[in-house]
Image 1: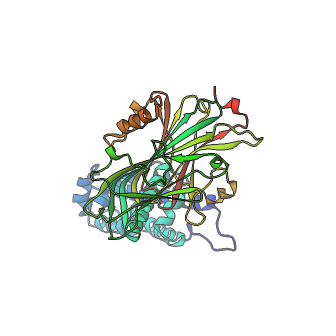
Image 2: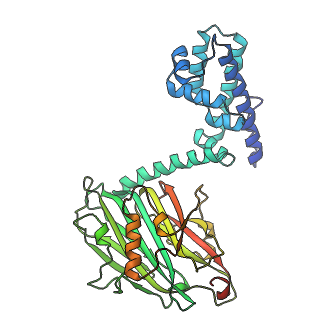
Image 3: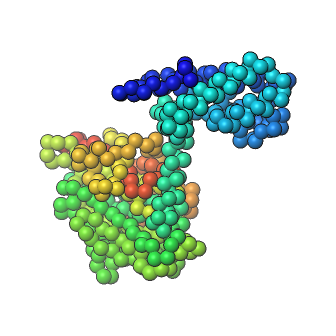
Length: 417
């Protein structure tokens, strides 16, 4: 591979040098494969036609045709099937009496492609490099690996859920300086894959905000009171499993009791926790972050994380999404900048939902809007006054924390009206 190789040295090639090499290989592959297809008696334009003519699998011809339609040579490298499949294409082309020079050009291009993959360490490494340049490749790359993590952790933990829901509603108290936060943690399609596997949910407000804050249920009882009812019973699977709450330091941990949940008895659970008297602004001279977090504690196929904010809270600000790895140092205080080193660079984003709870629906959850209206009625909150933001993630990594945060100025008057 004289013209396309990664030369070993003390520092290794730069990212731009590797991308240039991938581009050159992709360009040669595109020209060579297009040369073979153009030499066929009638160049098939459909997947099935090419598969039938060359006796190849449809998945191979699908990727080949898709790749030859790419204009960016880096995209060609991402879209092409592997060297083995391309060798099958070349062998099939020989049977069509295609010009030998075109066959040789294709063989050389595929050989360079195979050498590139070997030097990089494999197809996954190629996709990881390309994902920095091509968003669609990045999304496919991340989804594949997130799904693998979900499968592995589901079996190791012995539990999984179809949809994990974290919804935080922020509402001003009326005194101009504080707000209340209602956190709803839900799990749709929760199941135990292994008997006896523990199922936990937790809720935390970390940092100085915790000072003077009160944790309670919707009816005002402490969450760890013996008679506390933190489950939103009318929206849960019946009969409702028993949960126990325990406060440790700054974290409220909820544990599902008993063994009523199994692999064939998936359930839907929602619990609500009210945190009162959080400060709206920052009385000091240092700007601080406000917002909410969703921790992935149960392996999930989907995470829906909603932040619903009263229109008078931080009206001129839009939230930023920060994703943390919590596996070593635990839940993150979003104002602890020493935890910036634990952030994860994933292609996820925030979607504005507009104003009013009627617009805030989840396709997999029929009664989601009804539940939001219910908790607002219980708290005497105006359900038409919320503006919403959503982060929806397929296969959210187990042990990660998604945070929607506002960088709030230090003066209170600048953040409310």
